[in-house]
Amino acid sequence: MKCFRKKKVVLCLLICNIIFVIILYCFLQTEKVITDNVRKKITYTVVIREFEEFDHDVPQTVRHIHTVLGNDVPIFIVADKLTYPRMNFSNSDVQSIFILDFEMDGKISTDTEILNAISSDLVIFLPDGTRIHNKSVFERLIEDFFHSKLSQAFAVKTGNDNLRCTGMDINLQRWRMKITTFDGSEGHCDYIEGDQAILIRTETLSMLPSPWSVPLTWSIYMQFVVRRWKSFVYTPVVFVPRKGFKNPDSMKKFQHVKQKRENSLLRKFKIKEVVYKTDADHEKKFYYGCNRDSEQCYSLINDIPDFLHRGKWTPPCCLRALRETADYVFDIFSNYSMRYWLEGGSLLGAARSGDIIPWDISVDIGIYMEDIPKCQQLVKTGNYEFIDEKGFLWEKAEEGEFYRVFYSVTNRNYIQIFPFYSKNGIMTKDFWFKSHKQDVEFPEHFLKPLSTIAFIGKNVSAPNHVQEFLELKFGQGAIDNPKYPNGVSVY
Ligand SMILES: *[C@@H]1O[C@H](CO)[C@@H](O)[C@H](O)[C@H]1NC(C)=O
Ligand SMILES: *[C@@H]1O[C@H](CO)[C@@H](O)[C@H](O)[C@H]1NC(C)=O
Ligand SMILES: *[C@@H]1O[C@H](CO)[C@@H](O)[C@H](O)[C@H]1NC(C)=O
Ligand SMILES: *[C@@H]1O[C@H](CO)[C@@H](O)[C@H](O)[C@H]1NC(C)=O
Image 1 (cartoon, rainbow, N blue to C red):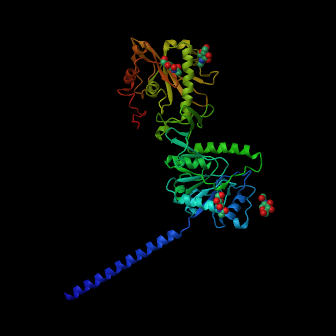
Image 2 (image 1 turned 180 degrees about the vertical axis):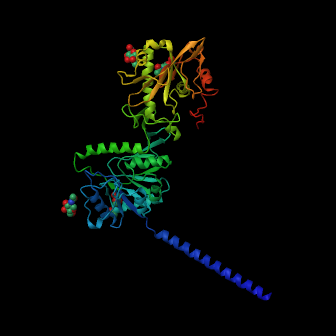
Image 3 (image 1 turned 90 degrees about the vertical axis):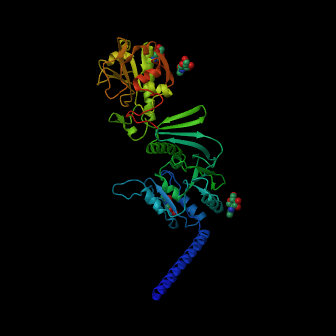
């Protein structure tokens, strides 16, 4: 028994001892971390990502950086492809050069490979040809950014002009980017316009799905905006205003490749419409999707457009094609004094927002069958399909007694024209879409008289008592409860 107690005491002493050692160790460790932090130098990697093969200053820029900041500053050159003539670095400027171009038998750098090669706290993207004012202003910038909690990135001007802080909104579902100009609030920019160096934490950069895409400003800020990250315009002078190209012809060439880069970035980021909002009433829209000479950019899977399966709505270029085609056909029908009215989903869209439903793929119009002879295009297309003088393709549907007008032969966005006739006061037709529950007969009194409704920026003809008409076709509450074609509610 006694012996047993003794054992317990020894055990207890042993445990106490272990705990003491652990506590001492922890204490020493924290002490070490604290002193490490005080002593720790903020490290950064300079990245030169944007330069032109035909007129660049990369070796001189690298030499300059090493002269001003020291030879131990890591400088990465990330290029789309090998540059010829080969860059001429002096021995002390031996660089990490990464090539993103793909060759079947060659060595390419992947995004993560470059990121893994960066061991510093920060990355600074410097435009080709940048010159640093002096070392102390540069180090001050690095300190200021490192300790700032305000924003995910700092932008510092490298040219003569001040940087412009703007708002940016990206709606991936609608394939759209909106840029709004606003003054002030330089700590909370979405997009920063102008020649600039960009400072970013390595950790932040590694969170971007496409860290090396160009143009850098577009690419970085667009990826930030999707994550609701903000950027800051750093105003102290850090860089000497950059000189232009060496060769006077290079500017034109540069404008051209810049445009090409922007287009391919927007394609990669799936943006098909860019809207510049200059003030409350003025917008400028640019479309980057399909046009009249390119193919319509979606296909149908089980009667439903593929973009809906991917959680997106109709590409803006398709909606534009539909509006243009519909506008044209409305004018023709009006010119021929034909009785027509908006049908189905198009009338629903008009009632909701005066526009095509944002995920719809056609505009549907009803007409009186007996009015067909008034419209030479419909008469003609009853016999054979044809392209009219404005480039629209008219076609009688293969499925049955109705017509389609396509935006062009290549771009097959279309509107549909359904001929109805009255049978004992009920409007009926000879072809029905079995899968469309809303495709049903209706009393003629909805057309007597016809009314008008605002649609795609004009007044078009519609049934009277629109809400009642729509509820007859789509069911109670159809206007206020949007549903996708497969019946799923829209959030
Ligand atoms: C490369 O550097 C050498 C020596 O600095 C110079 O003579 C030569 O012209 C340079 N070549 C190019 C293509 O810049
Ligand atoms: C660097 O430039 C700043 C701003 O022009 C100036 O105030 C400072 O004295 C310069 N420092 C050195 C070391 O030249
Ligand atoms: C409709 O008629 C007007 C006036 O005659 C004409 O200017 C216009 O081009 C016509 N529109 C179409 C689409 O035929
Ligand atoms: C549509 O009709 C309304 C009322 O009749 C009118 O105020 C408006 O200007 C018209 N809009 C267009 C685009 O013609």
